[in-house]
Image (cartoon, rainbow, N blue to C red; front, side):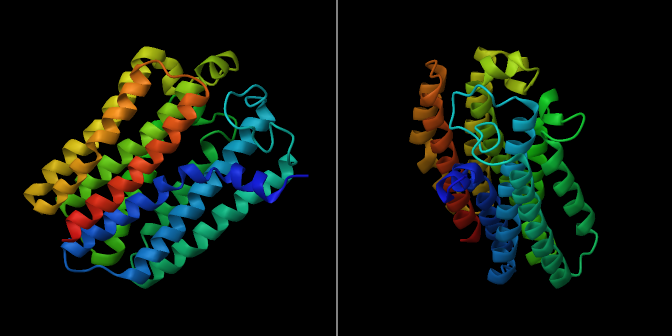
Length: 289
């Protein structure tokens, strides 16, 4: 019987900055356009958080029933670790995705941009299809593509649009930047799992690239957003606040390129999530000012 702690671990709280950060940047961009709305920002955050938790539970369920999580170097999963039944984890995933869908409908209704519902449907399908279904795209090395599109571009630009009903180039730059850090989160997680994933046919991008190239790709995903943040200073000099993240980016790059494995990469995963949160706070504030 899974405990509350087990369920919280299954929700993978360390990944939730990937949901909040795009909303912070999108709201900052909307403020830069003179159209920020706190209630709509909170709704967007609720959508993003619910979808992120839904993705995490869906991955736990799908990987567990496939046997992918039978051998893990990271924290044990609910399904694969036998802590909860597959049905219970699947219901948790569907409930979380359902909450995100309901909040999304409310947000769309407030804006009147009903075409956004189509993107919302795609987001829910992508959340389930990452490791679920007959041909999960996460097993084909396309996980980073999905993360970039939905937890980078769509989450950030959707937040800006639902508040300002227009987009700015800093919003696009911030969307690309935060999407790349979200991809870095996935990349470092998959670098840790290269030995086990390659044995069960889960050909993530990290598996396809190989250990060394995957590590350098992670570094690029961490540093490119800093450069994009600096470029945003052309619109708002306060965007240079993102340079405060440079020491953390240096430290994480050194650890990953130094060959960290196993539990050491779990720390990198946590700190990359904090880096993304910091990026969202600093760039969002910089764009708003």
